[in-house]
Amino acid sequence: MFTKTLHLVLACAALLMVHRSTAQYSNYIEPMQDIRGSSGINFDFGTNTFLGDLGGTKGLGKPFAKDFNSKTIRPYLGVSYTYFPYKWLSVKGGLHYTLVTGADSLITNKQGNARGRFDRNLSFKSGIEELSAEVEWYPLQLIPRFEEARVRPFIGSGIGLFHFNPKAKLAGKWYDLKPLHLEGQGFTEYPEQKNYKLIQPYLPITMGVKYRISNSYFISLSGCFRKTFTDYIDDVSTTYIDPNLFDKYLSPANATIAKQLYYRGLNGENSTLWPRGYASKDSYTSFFFTITYLFDNRRGYDYIGN
Image 1 (cartoon, rainbow, N blue to C red):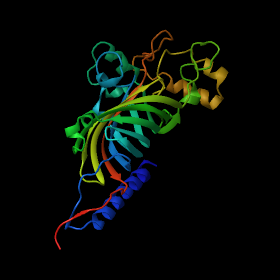
Image 2: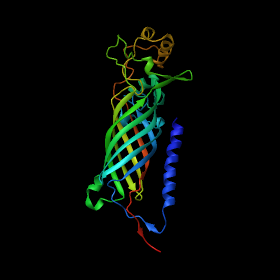
Image 3: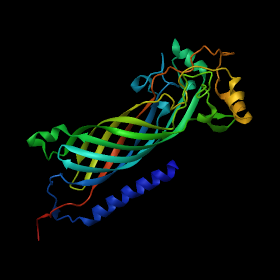
Image 4: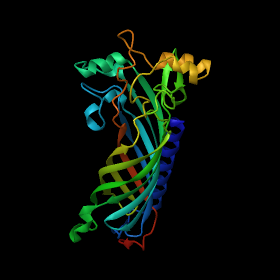
């Protein structure tokens, strides 16, 4: 699915660029136009990394940059629509796709709490589909002398929804983790453990800089951090449970799988009193390059030559 989506986004971006370049003549010069009222389509290509309970660096698992691990970097791509009601403000709605992954086996500095995380030996992966609406603010364009500047730093925020589905590998096969209730979600014996939803809201915080190549094109470099409201992107959050309860609540097949996946520690017999996760919200962060094609709203060319 990811490969097909990537090919489609690349093809659309290439077609727009070829169309625009063949429509221009070398003896015409485009004056920079007022961007107010313009709209366009954005193609994003970049990388993404997961920040959660699994993997990371020394100490406890934390969100944001503390637990960055280059081995969890995965591709990130998407398409969005932008409208500029003002020179200093744009609104955007988009669809994006990425992957997240994490593994305790990736921890290289095994000091202190990181040793316990390494011995925990859990791992996961998940595809993520996003739908978002954002507002981007261009502070430089509030200064009259920079209104039509080609370089446009910006900061953005908004709201979005993302769909995820954590999986873990066992004997060469990937299994969906939510139906296995590995931390007793929904079990009467663990009333504090609530079932989580695979569609969740998030708040994006984006920073970057755009460069206006012409009336028709922007290029951008951006980073996006997401504030989420779930600790279950990796299906790890609280404590181990009594494995005998899997037989009570799950089908025999699922109970067998759950008993093998809920605890995979390297240090022998586990205790239901040990922490399995650290109850801080998961997140993921993207860095990406954007090509923006502005739809043709020009009033004409300045002509030079014969």
